[in-house]
Length: 218
Ligand SMILES: C[S@@+](CC[C@H](N)C(=O)[O-])C[C@H]1O[C@@H](n2cnc3c(N)ncnc32)[C@H](O)[C@@H]1O
Image 1 (cartoon, rainbow, N blue to C red):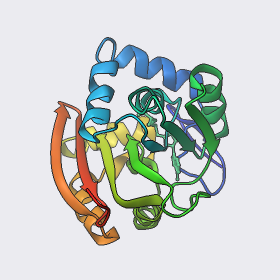
Image 2: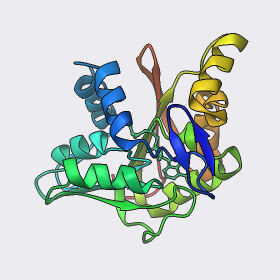
Image 3: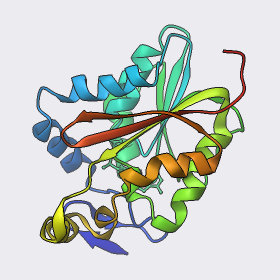
Image 4: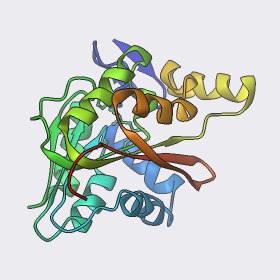
């Protein structure tokens, strides 16, 4: 069992899980007040989510992005959020589940989902939570579950600048936050087989990479 001040006690085998689900929801709503819909909505736009798409949100937390994606995929599509934390999945189910929006427990690096079953994979603020040694497996899983021609969009915090900032962030949020790999996301997506299309600074704190799985008819 690990514990950090911000994220709570984490189960064995999932050191990056956030178990303070309600506190995280509150923290995120307050920190990003008024900007949450605009910034996370921009991620949905950058991934070109359209009506009829089947969308997977990896490390969905309380499901804010999943719900926005479900709305963009409607009518005819759906969004599924997976997270390794039971309290997060419960919070998402309680507050954001709907006919086209569902949630289940799952590990990014070992998804219990069929090959080629999604058009879009999204992931926001979650990669830095996945243990470093499991990140390549997580990108390989995203590749596996996408249909040929499918899109992936990974967004993560820009890393804290300087040793002191990294130390403070690590003390509050735990070791995983210290190794925040935004500059490694694009090369890792390339290693998993994706063609990287663009990198975008969505706001002062958020960077995202859009990539496509080769193939398809588009
Ligand atoms: C900072 S939150 C981001 C939540 C949400 N995507 C957002 O943008 O607000 C990171 C989430 O990743 C989840 N997580 C950590 N390790 C994971 C793993 N190996 N597989 C799936 N989810 C994971 C945590 O439980 C947490 O809910």
